[in-house]
Length: 293
Image (cartoon, rainbow, N blue to C red; front, side, top):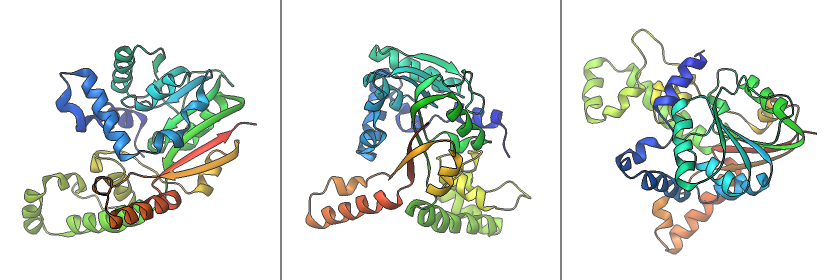
């Protein structure tokens, strides 16, 4: 099991979405705006499904901020916001974003397994794609519950095991690729890696056997085996994770397919409608809305 320090170091050097916009670093507003545009193009329904407006006038904690996309929307919807991340670079980027947009928030560096807050502090806790990377996800879920006021609400996104992406893209496609790459003798593998150098991140260290957990962590972030840890959950195991909360509502979501959005033909409209229908049932993002009674 990786340590919190390993997880921190990875995410401090790999902020989600950073690689796609690093070429715009000289224009900081364009840097953040382009990342937002990419997010909205890939996930056009995500803002509605996260229900940011529920945080209006509420003391809200965002647990894990990344580059600040969700934090900005929480603030723009009127949340009294505390922004927290394990990675100092994520806090720095989000603070910079808030300065550019003249938005108020408090910022701190801390980990989800040991929240530095009293019991029942927040009216709303929001976390997107964070606690499934924590060495002790149960501890992080318990801390969310502890820090949430009675009657308070939480919105947490974790990865969904019962999804098309998990079974087809990760288990079958990526798992098959990783099994082949890690089984082939070096003289056959090396020409392949020269053609596809990004696949080097899918090779286990010498002497280490490929495990299914390696496939999961490689398929749930852009860093391949550099990503220390990822977990996946069903709706049932998510309820067990947040066993002290009630009034569960689940939404599943994943990205749209951009070529389909750009083509108005009847066929692509049908395909897009089918993908939307499938994502609503077997999407990769498992969004959990719940309440503390």
